[in-house]
Image: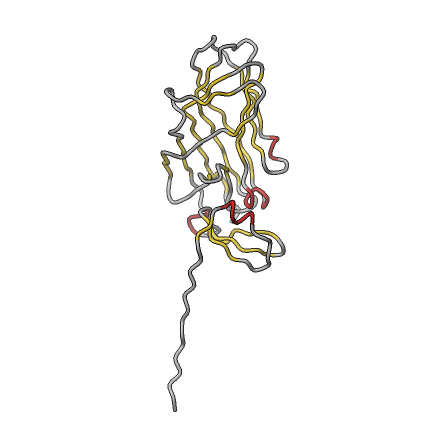
Length: 208
């Protein structure tokens, strides 16, 4: 009688970008690996498979320091023109192996629906017309999350360096997990400059 052996198979998927994943047609059962995690399509929507368990769902924090816009290379904001608040993650400090911001897409994201996060945004800014100028900060890209916004005023004089340290709390839904959210800023009433941008993102409650 011939022996019967079990045979194992190994499949390795390519690592795609988040932009490529979102460009793909929605096909039930599709399996995609990106820098943000492992995804599949379930009931017509992208669902994140990993990180969903283990370290990926643990409470933790990450600090992302932008190294492109510094005091020697300030980001110029034109009056009335909204732009994303950039952060290239040139320096990353974290509690353990977690990630809440995608450097490729420059969007913040979450692990599991109903998780709660705290976002701290830090930067320096100045304006030649501080009496008439303020900064409008908002989170956008996901329906309903533009409620996270604030007008930031200059309390120092013209062309004086001013520190901004703002804290926002939010929970995530599946749309937030799938598409991410962008942080945007606009100078209103006059031009301004910003630099030394830091995102500090902390998961304070895990639903999983």
